[in-house]
Length: 316
Image (tube, rainbow, N blue to C red; front, side, top):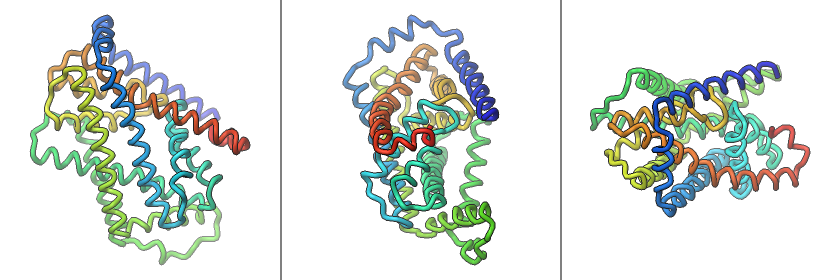
């Protein structure tokens, strides 16, 4: 409990620091003016598309879980929305921990399979983002700072090693004897659940679905850029997405407040966009990405709380 409190405090300090950097030297009245002049239908469209992100991410997760247990999509969708809701409300990725408890409560799937599927779900997201990014820098010269490229290179190395170990069966964990120790047994079952990445068809389908998810996010950013009257190359939206995801690796408060906005302001600054316009855009994109997901997640949270009240402490 003390450790969590310390991490939470660190997250608040980090978020406040980045919020200060975001607003430092910016004209607040100009930021408000940019936001007040926005086209409402465009904002609604971006917010609706954010819901589709969760819908398709859930379907990708279902594909991975189906290799071990066939679970109805209508069961997983509310669980995923609640996980997103809790990630927005609470720090330390609390929603992902709750997702394990909720999935276990609504299904007969083993905890190790659930954890393995969630890990693979995130991993497919990472692979597709790296494919998108490296496809971009092959054809376009982008002035990306070294402190961005370094973690991206590390992520690429990790991805390649993981694929070599599992997808190409260099290490076959099935040849290892099942340990009797409870902790080692859980670790063993977790790695056993990752064997499904050997299914090349599933791997390709998951990556393609992940690319669809990123395409929707690219569209959201493009629509909002157009609403703000910000003219930058379309490929720059990929750089914005990469920046946001790198920022989310920094420990901060719930929903990565501060770090999220700072990454966007940094990217738009590369294209000579004024700080006020960049800050206004970052605030609105973050708001629109979470508002409908937050509302639907809350509705599903209340339903789950009513159906299984004993889970309330676990999912918090």
